[in-house]
Image (cartoon, rainbow, N blue to C red; front, side, top):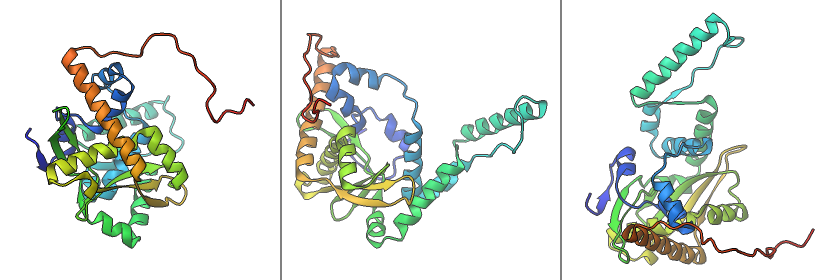
Length: 277
């Protein structure tokens, strides 16, 4: 597919694109071997990933969410799966789920459904967040990286006309000091750099004209949230890391060698924060 901006591309079509997405950069930062494994393995989504996808759909694509998801039918109280009646119920339940999946629908648990709408309700009553959400959603960008020539892709959750790129993240805690650790550990700043590079390349602007924020929403308790903008230092680290990862991918593809760890023996010293206790 040609480089450009594609506002209405279905998610399945986006994920099938033969281009470098931000999720490929994280393993490439570890080694060529990790990148090769990541791109050639089937990865089952974790419960946290499933909930994150459901929250994204509920907040950003409400009509699609209501059409796509079907509430899970609860097992009748006292039903014993070892009895003939219980076995018949479970057999019918599996058949119903299979039929829904064949129709392109998914089953969502009562718990996850409640979480999704608690988050949506909280976001909807906040004026600043409502204005932010009143923007383009899930727009696909395809571009060629200017340094490596690799075809890249990204799909920002929210793109505001003021040049604010925003990514919705579910989390345990949206406090700045807690989410800061999540950003670094999960390499969210690298994802942000990749997104900013894509938007800037296609929109014809400089990355410095764009800002990147996280809409960090807690997935338990009071479902509170914060808008957290990525600061200059993390932006710089993110751009450097994203370029390093793309260069690794290019080198691996051109050489056909996807090297793992350097196997020479290593010495590990105590980290700076360990006090010997």
